[in-house]
Image (cartoon, rainbow, N blue to C red):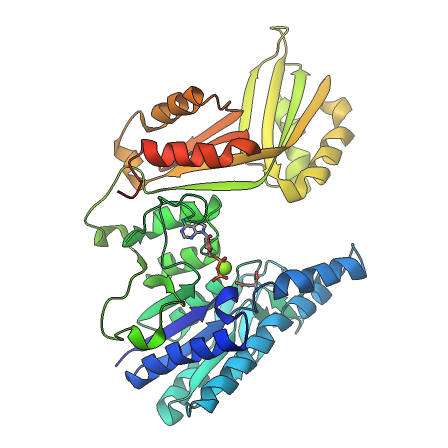
Amino acid sequence: MGRLVMKFGGTSVANIDRIRNVARHVKREVDAGHDVAVVVSAMAGKTNELVDWCRDASPMHDAREYDAVVASGEQVTSGLLAIALQGMGIQARSWQGWQIPIKTSDAHASARILEIDGTEISARFKDRKEVAVIAGFQGINPQTNRITTLGRGGSDTSAVAIAAAIRADRCDIYTDVDGVYTTDPRVVPKARRLDKIAFEDMLELASLGAKVLQVRSVELGMVHNMPVFVRSSFDKPEDIDPHGTPPGTLICSEEEIMESHVVTGIAFSKDEAQISLRQIEDKPGVAAAIFGPLADANINVDMIVQNVSEDGKTTDLTFTVPASDYNRARDTITNSKAKIGYIRLDSATDVSKVSVIGSGMRSHAGVAAKAFKALSERNINIRAITTSEIKFSVLIDAAYTELAVRTLHTLYGLDQT
Ligand code: ADP
Ligand code: ASP
Ligand code: MG
């Protein structure tokens, strides 16, 4: 007998039929004798609708009220799943974040989990064999007593944090794909499912655009050494042997992975914007004059490239920011124009970042050079490059994203054969 957290995403609870299907997955594990805590997302599309309603009500809305609104999607699904489970004769109750409580910071819309008290849930496993159905994505700030949410995709993080709090043996993330693939299988049909992936590699994949897991959930899994298993909710619940090994991907520590490739996977993100400042005087203090105000405005700068301007005397500086911060970043720079002293500002929002990830890169040289050649052969222009120990990224025109991802996927031998 063990203890499990089972998390179901939006498509897995999209309607009452799907919720019943989830209940059958839960029943299978309960019948096998496990203690089960379930974490649910809002029904597919619901959170987007709630976010739109907030924007419609007022574009400059109060983030605390935004959280009060968007947290409601998960409240509905947790109640519905508890009802479905009870209908199958399984003891179950729903839990909102504040009822447990899941204590978080007060950074509304992107709160961090500070503490979860798992005592009551664990006691109910023992006393009544009761399944805990927990609303994902939400928590409460203990100082203000206000409802918070954890950022988009945050139910993954709720699930891993609860798994750590109740000392679960594993955290199963049920979604609409049957595991983590070498790249998004919806974009590259030849993508291959990985049996295992190291926390470090998964962290990079998630940070660089693979939305299959929220970044913070991978960080928590790593910190608590909690095995996270990504699998499909679309497999027929009754066909799965609860003691067998179903298809899926285990995210675990690097030591547990026998076979390692130089490149593990490819991620991409279209949520990028590029700003280039032309003909800046090349003197000390310029970078500080540009990036200081951006940091003060809480804008995350990602890639930075500096090169000599066309005139051969001054310098050009290019950097990227998240697309959602693009307007603010432009305004911030324009306001500092006199201090920076550039001649022209060029910008582009139709750009994307393609990243190649693999902890094997630590011990291999020339991995990125191969990519630059392959992309140039496809006539894909690289606007900026960044590298680190286990990944490199290129910024390209958004129109070439799929072509670039497919080219690199084949180049590094990741295609399914
Ligand atoms: P959920 O609603 O269950 O949380 P998400 O939509 O957040 O599901 O995440 C699952 C989606 O992530 C998949 O449908 C897939 O398109 C996308 N995805 C992106 N990159 C990958 C990858 N490397 N492996 C698997 N899925 C990926
Ligand atoms: N419902 C939230 C979202 O759509 C949280 C989640 O699904 O993980 O972002
Ligand atoms: Mg998700």
